[in-house]
Length: 412
Image (tube, rainbow, N blue to C red; front, side, top):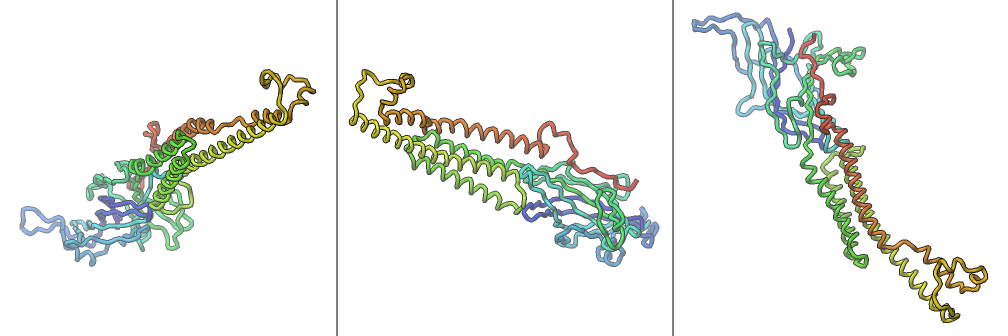
């Protein structure tokens, strides 16, 4: 038994990050050599001698074949419309060549910290169920091997992911027992029955973020900008400013819940959570800003009414015979006795004028600059850091360390 060679032609149907799996529709072609099936050349009097036999797939169950299975499979099935999609050919030297079409849904542990700028690595594992490396060894089909045409990848287009030639990686490794190591993947898998040959194909899905830009980030940013409109509305228009604040908060809440409803519940914070969370904070602060403006306005009005009452009462009790009202600088230079002779109410009014210097109009004016500046700085930092971590900035275009390494098809 020289080994079972694998050749795949892939068609990726879907990648579901909610269910943590992906589905493949592919042709699995296996070839191995069985000397018991060698028949030499058959001369039937035809111009060309027969060097290979193509037989019905019914004979496949009567021949020895590798007990290939997929360790990370969730479910799979063979295609049988309109007949069983299988092929069996036997060459004169005993080389057996089979081709079967099947669909496999395999598990894929996805990491969504950088969503929607993430890249997912999903793998399909191929292994013998019962035969150890002492009995069978799996290899990817080599392009130098005349018995197969090499590993093929048809053009794959996915609506939510970018896919090119760098996104499929073919690896071969040997999983050993508890005392061994995995040479290719640098990890250990404890097997109680021995060492097993395993083939691994890794698919790298680079998520396309255009859909999420239009459906999540752009609406969220516009809602934040709309919340700033209240800073230019008259402070006396309480219903208008309150409605804008409440509606923007409800809209941001709907965006957050709708986005997380389409994602699996995870214990960590995603990039989209950071953006939506900061946007939500800004619209809440915009509503709180109006509450602070209304509070400050009320305090100023109460102060003015109190000053007017206190000022009017002191004039009725004790008129001041002065040609002109003294200014603050003159009052500060009065002698101590003169200052003591002034009505206490007038001194109190002068002190209150210095204390309440904040005006509600100043808060709105400051907010018109503070909120846009804060949101602009946040966007710059957020997108630069996110794109750098996702390696999608221009100066990261030639860095391939996040791609998988193509190991040799055969052991050297």
